[in-house]
Image (cartoon, rainbow, N blue to C red; front, side, top):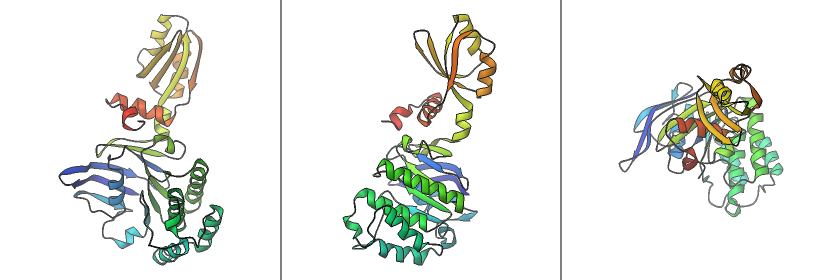
Length: 301
């Protein structure tokens, strides 16, 4: 488990990270969402022990991370722009990381290189951005650490490669208990992979919740009521986060369980009603609008 408590980092009198507190449980995929400048990269660098916090604490399995070799053995950090030795190739980087991480699986690494069509003898300096990201991810996966920290992991990868990496993450979580922490400015990239999502804004945590909990407690209902009175009856006492109307068709986002919606609508007269699935984007829009933020401007551009 990674526990972050009141983490703060200041650069030139500017608070890049402002008292961030988050808990990242084992064997889950944690998505750290935020625009450029929100503090995602700085948080990841402090979790990995690259940067020292000005205040607050980061512990990994109850061990402080900064300046702690034993803690750092349990994690692999992949920066937004991965670093490789000058004039190196994939074999050079494999020899380096297999010397650091005792569980590095060389055989698996070269199999992945072949599957991803990455030439082990080609200079990495001639790779595209996407190829460099693929190589960094494969090195991190084959190191078989407990945690892998990824900054803008899927940026530069085509859709097929993204799905390939996500599949490998799922396999590693199942077989080795891997815990991926993925920072991204793109909410849609994490739609189908995250268990828990944290939203950073101006260096602080705006929202941090389990995705399944959010999905279970937010419902999108589309319906046509027989009368206005029936509509008022259905919504009485319910927390309505969003309401749309097109002719007689009403669409509501309400905070309650699916069972509560069914029980409520069983008592009113409707022409029809259905409960629709909410996307991660819709969930975050609903949750952040409640506290006065417009996530469409923060994340969706």
